[in-house]
Length: 166
Image (cartoon, rainbow, N blue to C red; front, side, top):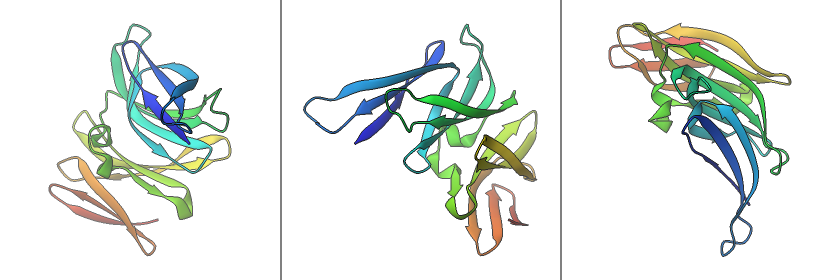
């Protein structure tokens, strides 16, 4: 019944759209924050995670930004928390399959690359917002995929497959 749309010029308006009547779609809420989200992922009915780039008020991008939005009130979406990685880029910005949401642990795994360093960043969604659970380095190239099997997290890059305990 609710859709989410983002755009970017200098700031990232997150729009909430009422989809209950397909013949009469309407914007019901808006939140403006610096930067943008290239990928949005719902985390249940009340939370939305965005992966994109942080930016200055003038629109100059500065690095990866992972945002946690509270969309419990579609008329008034809020930025609950964000994690910023200066000078970095995430493959999840252009490939949604690079993003992993593991609901049993409220864990998001997002690949982050910058300054020759490649990692998968684990972020726990907690009551107050986001808490970094850890980072898994990738040998040589950016992390392309991650998957949980049993109690292990597997991360795949072009050159390696890493296995880590959750």
